[in-house]
Amino acid sequence: MGRQSTETTLDPAVHEQTRMTLLRHLLRRGGSSTASEVLAATGIAFNKQHMHTRRLSSVGYINIHKSDNGTTLEITAVGRAAIARYRALMLKTLEELTT
Image (tube, rainbow, N blue to C red):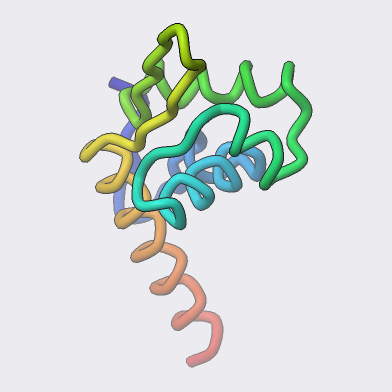
């Protein structure tokens, strides 16, 4: 698996802006979306999307399903857990900044 975040370290696989955009889109779509839908909804260039989906897949945060009908991206339980950890850390950090 990819480098897991600790309580005080942001997970670079989630924190990178393009990957965060991809993950956010998948979550808003119920966990999965076609690659074409991601391109249309996010405006991320094809080559950039391809590179970042491969990175997310390599750390186990998404699955990539290819078929004759196209490519589907699906967030995994590991990916959901990584986002939850990231969110908790960001909320904690923001809280510390305001107290």
